[in-house]
Length: 187
Image (tube, rainbow, N blue to C red; front, side):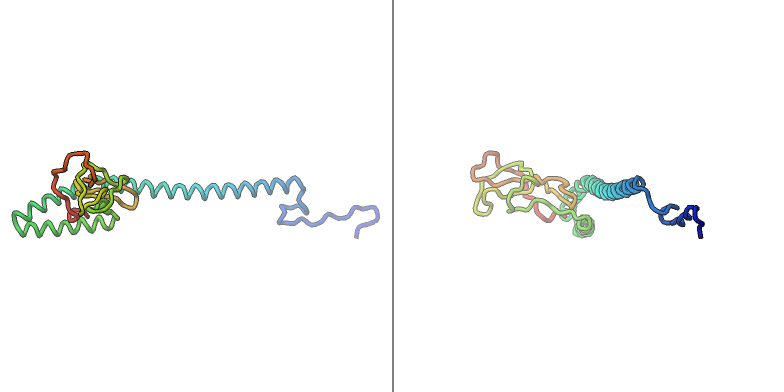
């Protein structure tokens, strides 16, 4: 017990407040500032992590598109060789068919799909009209009549636009003399 003239004993230190019994008002606002800064920093880091992940996916899709852009002409040249081989020898034609099946499986796994379809409406965002021809009952105005070069898309976007001939009610360009391409040659 303290005596009469003695000051009261100090209160025991509280471990949760860093050794002081009660925080001072200045220290309380500084702690709140640090907590706020921490929350903002944490949110910024999470946004950064998400942005990096999106950029990584975009770069991956762009790299895949570049590879596919290089492979498609090889695939198309193979299709021309297959047609010539079928005329020359049935066994060679059978071999080409097996290789073509593998190409198709590869494109299917990667999500590559052909763009142009004969009889479908002209889609300028995916097709390039290289010629026009007169519309008829089989091919109404504004539809694809012929595929000169197939275009391809995949989940990351358009790889290459299709080159097509479009039916017009009043043809302003010369009639196309290229042979009709078929859906057979596309993946």
